[in-house]
Length: 94
Image 1: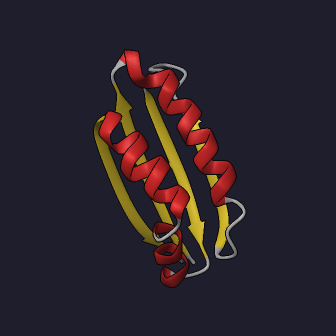
Image 2: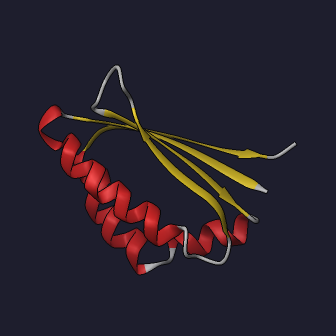
């Protein structure tokens, strides 16, 4: 099992738009065969901060996710250009 944790920070004027995009990304990603779990959360203390917790069956499933049309539209052309900061970490289940 492969886990990817992504942490985004947006400017206040982009946070609500980012939430809408991330909700759409979550819903589309959950339909992929190799996705075990895909959750998105927004900080209560700092509403400009979001966290994604993604679980994939394996590395091939993550690569398949990155190759989808919705990934390009919602991530590469959507939230990443809006983000002030992005941190990502890949982990393996133990």
